[in-house]
Image (cartoon, rainbow, N blue to C red; front, top):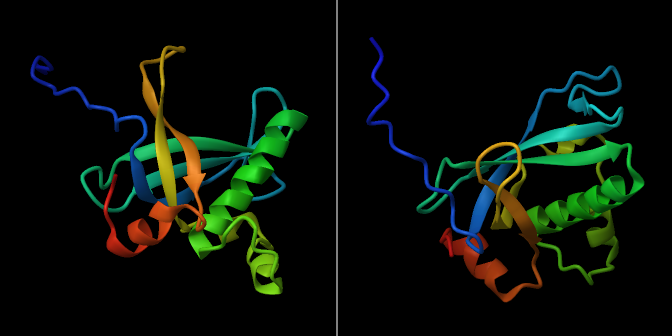
Length: 157
């Protein structure tokens, strides 16, 4: 007999919490790239797992899809998201137009994103097909005053 009466519920990370997380690209099922997955709608996306790496919520995971091909709005938003990830991981302010910053915002392969440590603001997605879940509300980049403190101190807010 298996008794599941005393299984604890997993509490979500509260919305608005800022955490340091590591991006892990999950394997895909497309012939174009080992990390690209086929969407039900025919597009392609990166299946991302963000693992909180410090603080009270260490080891918790947040999943996110980055659109690479398909719906134009989704792909455009995903390109901005990738830009923000690179800026967060590399300590670049959004308004930095230096040659070094422009080079740091470029990747050769999607695998270049795998293993990036970034600062994210957590949100909560309610309802839907399944129970409530954490999501990424935004990526925090170097011009944000909390960025330097969080990336050096390892504190979750």
